[in-house]
Amino acid sequence: MATLTKAISKNLFDSVLPTFGSPRVHIPAWDNGQKMFICDEYESANGNRYYRGFRFCDRVVIVEKVGLYHNWTYIDGIELYAFNGQRLELIQKKDYDKVYRNEEFVKAESVGMVKDYLLGCLKVQRTSISMEQIECQAKELIGRCYKSFLDADFNTRLTQILPVIEQK
Image (cartoon, rainbow, N blue to C red; front, side):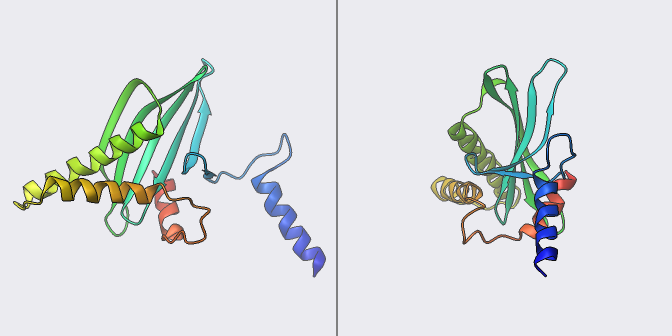
């Protein structure tokens, strides 16, 4: 029994953290410092590195497109997706040109995008809610996306969400 357990553990760790020269299993990597999963990392012919990062809660997914140029980290774009029960739908998108990536900037932009989306939905439905209430809801929603995946009480439908996100 100990040999089987050891073999399973060794195979698991070898696939996630392989020795140099061996292929790595492609799974999103959690970056606790940025509070997001990192995927689709690549290097351009010019030597610049790019990756997509995503964070989510039970209602929205925030996707960041990040570029590492020499010593600087830029935000190339932010996309906001909402769940429709079966898949993700793009609800807001912003592209940037030479904007330094800053956590507070990304958070403020995401809150603004949620506010714009909510205001548009309310206008279509001919419903009126105070701006303070909309702002409070947007901040609370985006704040839940910045919860650490490593927290013991991280309560989301991760097994349902990750396959949908990986398709994007």
